[in-house]
Image: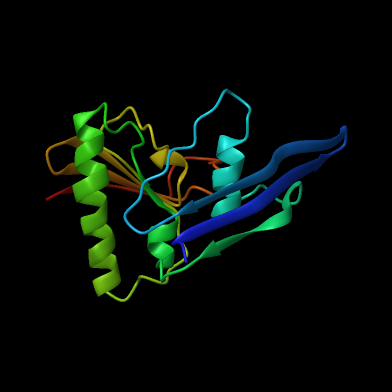
Length: 172
């Protein structure tokens, strides 16, 4: 069985103006060790497919109306919602943080017994913030070698009503 198996995924948004048919019958499988890129023109459903897979569709409007998403394997909650900068492979900082720094931090959280914590973590290697750390529940922004700002207090829907609850500059 595939690590991730998406079968005939259908996602709709119910709005005051009617129903939006965002995703219609998407099917793919991802085997262990494989990588998958969702490509397409603007508005074709790439982001909605991704949000449906990780169960972060905006409520109450968005919902999976048909199909299934199956995970085979134990993906800890803390890893399921974590994301490093998506600019890789075009940015050296993104490569460093996606492949080295964030996995190291997640492994340390798991060692401390926090692998099942349901929290959204976003990490960017520079102030460009491509992975949107300021809107995450925990955001980490790099400002130089081993120099980060940690922000806490965003929301799952990507909003932030005010300044971060806590801002800490960490080195090391």
